[in-house]
Image (tube, rainbow, N blue to C red):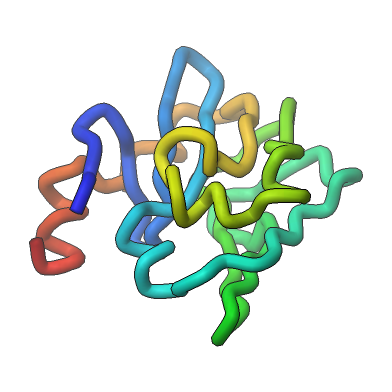
Length: 126
């Protein structure tokens, strides 16, 4: 299972690529494999802000619907519109084309309690 070392992770299985004050958010390969075939991603296109620990949207698979939690507080700058027509990109490429949102990080200390790849591997028993 792929767990890139350059990313941060949440205990709820979101990943974050931090680039300066920008964060790209998606779900991990482990999460998408647990969900199964993803058929719909619901992130309000009018949503401007995300708040650490709160739901930023939902992801629907054939068998279940799951919340996506924000790993930091920030301002959304882009939502991956490709997922509207092709949510299966999350299954095919969770760390690449399957990213969900990009947001400006308001407070870098929000990232302090995120997991590194080693801690995330331990979390999922790898």
